[in-house]
Image 1 (cartoon, helix red, strand yellow):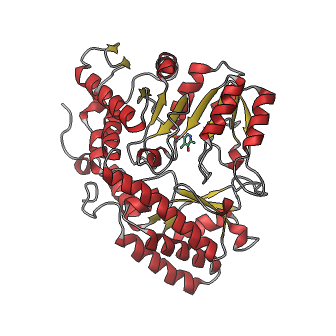
Image 2 (cartoon, rainbow, N blue to C red):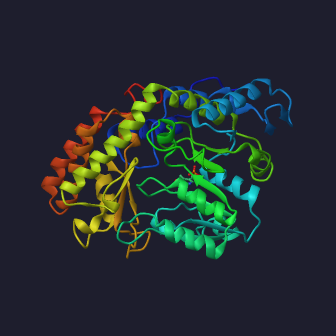
Image 3 (cartoon, rainbow, N blue to C red):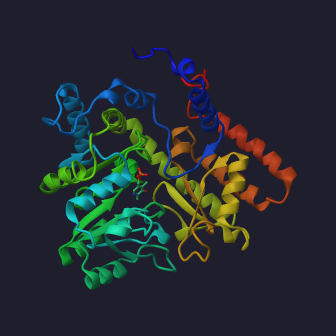
Length: 423
Ligand SMILES: *Cc1c(COP(=O)(O)O)cnc(C)c1O
């Protein structure tokens, strides 16, 4: 018989760790650009009895019996995502963003095939050809970068590399780049060489859902995404594509790359698509962008250099050398976390320091916007970061600033203090 008691009674050790992290989440200011805070409804779906079901295959074509509710659930998630993103084909099974990309590569590439993608050092992702990732081990990635002066993607470079190397896939998308992508230009380049045009929208699909960023779906052949970043859903991946690629993509995900889909996560995805289709989510997405712009302006006013001079989306990159030539991203991120502001160090274009150290910080506004912060608080956060870094040798000032950070964080917590798990 399954033990029906609550987790506090069954496993106080894990329950205590959950409570510990809830307190951390509720008392820090969270600026990690890939993170967000899912709703109780999303988490309830993910923690539901759907965790028990095996359902290899797709709705109506399963390898297991007992899939009548699962079929309706997965189809609902697919239909909602199609409506939200104007997609012809949707796959909600990838376990993560990395799995979504792997599914696409498995569907359309043979080992050794070429892909043109944004260089990792200039904002690309691990799955865009890093030598320590399967993508870099199986396929030949040709990187394009950003222009040294504008720090924006140079479409002339993309085109000349495409013509020279003739990749099978032209890939646009990023983890650390703050400007709109020129989908039309990427589309033309892919057409010129007969390549597929793929967009990895993992970071900004939430802004697309909320109509705060242009939708790549109409112009791209294939769009991959995560559901847990700006979209504020459960951890997971998804693929949106033109109908004609559906058969290969279905196979690329299952059985090429995964076994059974995680049905409970798909339940969470269905709830998040529903949440993201509301007017409230559209104001949320607009506020994310407004907060990032306000923060970029506040940093610039305070003499902190923002890479490319600003942002069009939810993230910005700061050059720590504008505060002090000796200040590294690593030192800055460690100090800020100890003071209650959680973010990550990040390489900036043409960074002379290695990836483990870096000269930059990456900041995202999806999380603080979920917590209800607006432009005034975004400016306050920029101010607290700048003052903390400038006074990093002055313990008295740092102590005072920590207090201010803690007050601001606790005025905007993501969850109520009596949220389940915080008993
Ligand atoms: C986050 C991210 C991914 C991977 O998502 P995971 O769910 O962490 O596997 C893929 N591509 C880009 C551009 C990302 O930012």
